[in-house]
Image (tube, rainbow, N blue to C red; front, side, top):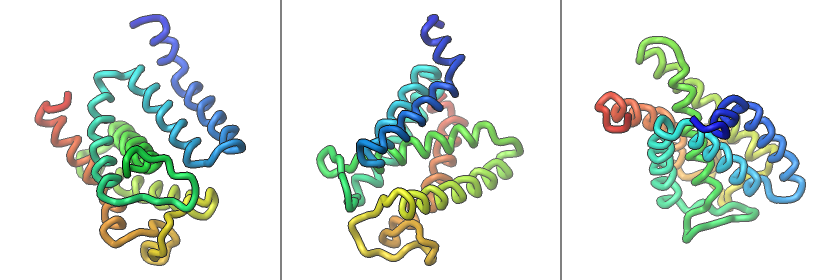
Length: 187
């Protein structure tokens, strides 16, 4: 392992903290979604530098999930939309980051596979609803639509199919990655 890579690995969490503080400062100058795109991409790159083989394939699978939903559903926000073709970069990068994080938390969760899966589902839903709530009500990240929220909770203002995807994407992602790892497809 090179000296630079070992230093990055040694100070991994400190670098993420600095990047997060950079994100907070950046939000004073640019849209919060743009700042989040930058933050999430930097964290994904950092994770890839540290754990190439271990996380590279996990990132690719998360990106495929994110591409599926962002190419299917036209995310159009009320402010600042950065797009490649018709794919909005904010949900693409946010979904990729979120799913990679779900996998990292799942790998650190203790218990048999059923208990781990139940724990990660519960954790995923708590974080999903919390982040959706913060994004919508605190940061003002709103879709340019008039869809009702999920169960009147003030989160996931989208079509019914999108609401289903949001609720089940994390658990399905874990099942897919686990299946591929068990069959040595991605080890």
